[in-house]
Length: 153
Image (cartoon, rainbow, N blue to C red; front, side, top):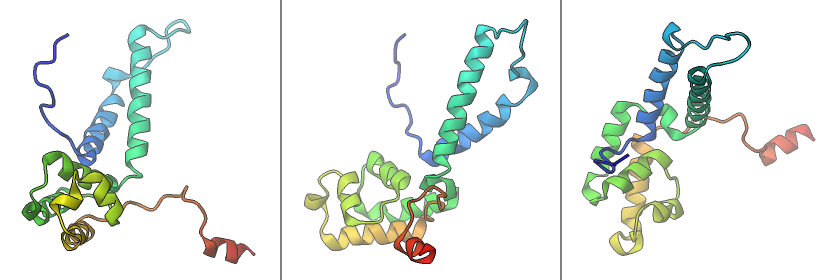
């Protein structure tokens, strides 16, 4: 197999989640149903089961990430807000996918951030992220806080 176009398009986690949600609904159709034949699954049915598992696990993971609450409008607003900072496509994508909340995270996601931006500019980028991108959904599996320990005595 030959790769004709390496990295033809970069997809955000929001786009991947939408794509997988559509695929998940397609996989529930009769065309992709898995039927037992004489107690064994065919190779095609086994492959479909594995595909269903991968889609399910990926969607489950992405639903806990910031992309689960992002809308096309919030993504457009984010891209407009950070346009003055001359970030690469990959850096914009990482900021969108990770939704950093601290300067340390910004420094990890933007290459040579300390040379390219001063602290005020990095704080402006953080502010733009906070204003335009909704926070990640609350997770049920987060570790208990000090308040939880105090309430439970």
